[in-house]
Structure formats: structure tokens, C-alpha cells
Amino acid sequence: MRIKSIFLLSCCIFGLVVTACKVTNGFDKREKDIKANQSRAKEIVQAIISYERDGGELPKSLDDLVPTYFAELPKTTSGQEFVYSLDDANYFFLSFDVRHEENLSCRYMSHLNGWDCSFGTKHQWLP
Image 1 (tube, rainbow, N blue to C red):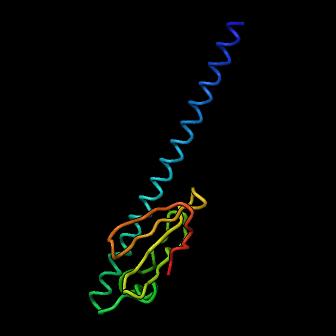
Image 2: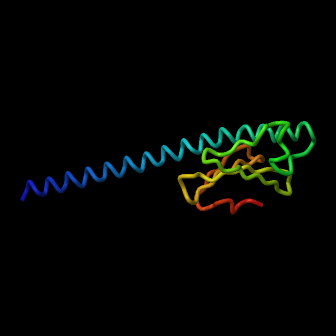
Image 3: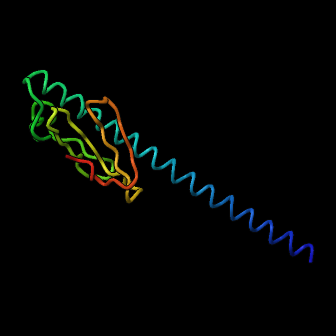
């Protein structure tokens, strides 16, 4: 009976370790995806800033950056287009969905010069 209990306990511990490894691997994959997309988006942000500096206003859409700043617009690691929007205060937002998470989007906010990645948003925060 004691050997059976030890065996069952060992199996439970092994199962927990395997599950923890899968969760950690999922977080690592998500973080790599976010960083890769932020890197691609950084090129777009720099082009938007250059466009504003050169023309005195922000682009109305990302298509305004072609062909002067890009031959074609960069896409996310999953092949999706970045989402761009302007607000009334003349700030811009650039966002992408994280492909490994159903309800996770990341957005660059020009007025904060930084990123926010939040669960449950899926671009609901766009103006």
C-alpha cells in the first residue's frame, strides 16, 4: 500500500512539473511574439514620426507611409496588418493582436511613448 501511495504521489508531482513547463513555455512564446511585433512596429512608429516631421501632420492611414518610408508595410509575425488610429488630441496608436492569446492586444501610445499589453481588449480601446 505504501509503494502504491508513493507511486501515485510521484505521478502527481510529475504531472504538475510537466504542466508548469508547458505554461512557462507558453509565456516564453508569447513574450517572444510580443517583442518581435514591437520591433516591427518600432519601424512603423519611426516612419510615422518622420512623416509628421517632414509634412507637418500625422498620416491619416498607414498607407500614407508607402512608398516614401516603406516599399510595403511591415506585418505582424502572424502576417496580420498593424492597426493604426488617431485621436482628437493629435496622438496616434499602433496595435497588434498577440496570436497565442485570444484576448490580448498590444498598443503603442504616442502620448506616452510606450506600450500597453492588456488582456480582454481586442482593440476595444481604439477611438
